[in-house]
Length: 129
Image (tube, rainbow, N blue to C red; front, top):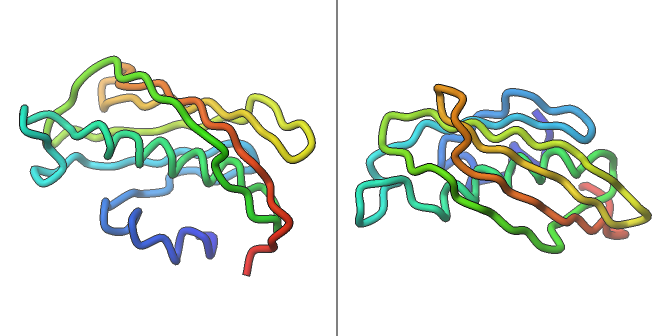
């Protein structure tokens, strides 16, 4: 596991599991817990976003330079509930200079699409410590 993820307390708190970590590609999963539900007893959208954002972060940090999000958008397509497993699959679309574009699909355990996320990355001049 990369140092970035070893130090990621938010991902640890959410119980995120890195299934695949390759340059430009990542798969991260999460089991939805009762404390992840909103007032309608469905998975809080912010936590679906956090799952997708983590897969995006892994996919876009391809070398020793720190790459951060320049922006991201998400479309929620299906609600989920406690006990379900969500999986975020991030893929690099294009990198041009210091900017990148990544798509992340979040699915449930049946393969149904729960959300589509598009992240825009910015590679900084900082190096991973």
